[in-house]
Amino acid sequence: MRIIFENEIAAPVPVVWSFLDDDNKLPLWMPEVVDISYPDGQNREDPVGTAFRQTLNEGGREKTYDGLVTAYEPERLLGVSLTDGRFGVDVRYALPPSGHATRLDYAADLVLQSRLARILGVLFKPLTISILKRHMANLKRVAEEAAH
Image 1 (cartoon, rainbow, N blue to C red):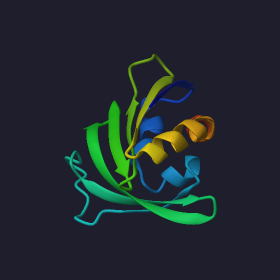
Image 2: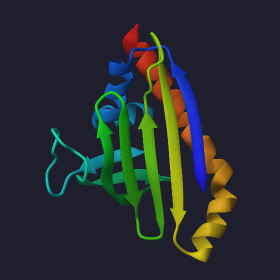
Image 3: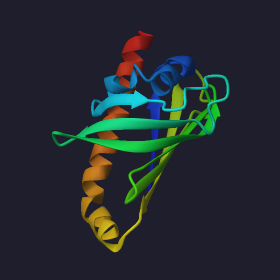
C-alpha cells in the first residue's frame, strides 16, 4: 500500500530539512515520538545504512520499531525504513527545488507481512492517512513558525 503527499511549506529548504534531520525536532511535528537511539552509533557524515530504534507512543502504549536510514542527501532527500516484523514502512521525504518556499514530496510504502496485517491495513488505512496528514500539517506549521 502506497501513500503519497505533496506539501508546499512557506519556509526555506534548510529550515524544513532541520525538522526532518534533527532527532530532537521530530517530536515537534510527530508528537508520538518518544525516543530514537542508535545501537551501533550514528554516522552523521554518511548515514545511509545506519540502524536505529524508534519508540512511539501508540494509543497510550509504547512500541519500538527497528529502523534503517536508506537514503540521505542533505537538504534534498531522506529515506528511512521502519519495521516490527509484522509491519514495515519505507518512507521518503524529498525536497525538490521550489523557489522561495519548500515543496515536500512524501511517499510511504507500507509492507504488511501477514494476511491479518493486510486486512488490518485496509481497515486502518483511513486512520493511517489521517495521522500522516496531521504530521505533514504539523511539519508545515513548525517550519513556517521557525522561518518567520
